[in-house]
Image (cartoon, rainbow, N blue to C red; front, side, top):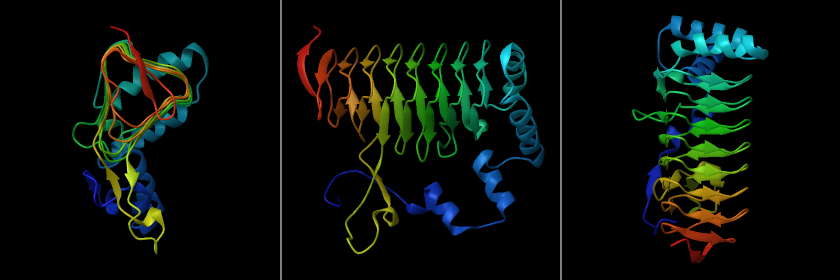
Amino acid sequence: MSDQQGRTIAKTNVIREKLARGEGSPFQTYRALTVGEGSLWSFIRYEILTTLLGPLPGAAGYLLRKIFYRKLFKSVGNGLIIGRNVVIRHPGRISIGANVTIDDNSIIDGRGSGRQGIVLDDNVLINRNCMILAKTGPIHIGRKTSIGSNSVIVSIAGVKIGQSVLTAGGLYISAGSYRFDNPDIPVMEHDAWSTGPVEIGDGAWMGTRVTLLDGVRVGRGAVVGACSMVNSEIPAFGIAVGTPAKVIRMRR
C-alpha cells in the first residue's frame, strides 16, 4: 500500500497500542479510556452519574439522564433523550444539539476525535445498539439525520454525514485501514492508514447493511441499495447497488 496516496496514522495513536504498552496503573488506564484528561472531580462525577443513572429504566431514567448528563458533555442543547445503558466515553469531546436522541445500548466514544470532536447536530437520532467510535478522527452527523439500529461508524481520518440522511439498520462505515507492506510481521503491528475521510451528502439514503470503505464519498441525494459495499465515489442523485456498488441509474 506504500504506493497509494493517503495518510499514515502512527501506531502510537491507536488505542490498542496504548493499552498494549501498559503504561500507568489500571486506574489510570481506565480513567484515560473513559474521560481522558481532566480533573479528578470530573472523573468521579462521570462514574457516579453513569453508574447510578445509566441502567435506570422507565421515565425516571430518561428524565434523570436528561437533567444530569448535560454536565458531562462539551455542549448540549435542549430536549436530549438518552436511553438505557448508553456508554459515553470522553464526553468532553462530544457536542450535542437540540432534540437529539441516543437510544438504548449505544456507544458514543470521542477519545480520538481531536479538537473537532464528535458533533451530533439538532434532531439527530441514533437508534439502539449503535457504535459511534472516533479512533483517530472527528465525526460530524448533520441535522435531522437518522442512524439505523446496529450500525457501526468508525473514524480514522474523519467521518462527515450530512443533513437529513437516512440510514437503515446495520450501516458500517470503516474509515481506515492498515498497511501490510511487511509480510514478516502481523498486520496489526503495522501503522494504520487512510486515504481520507468518509462523507455522505445531504438527503442521501443508505439501505440495510450498507458498507462504506475508507475515503469514499456518497453524493447529495444518492441512494445505495441494501447489502452494497461502496469503495468508490457515488455521484449526487445516483442509485447504486452491488459489491462493489455500481451506479445503475440517476434519480435526475
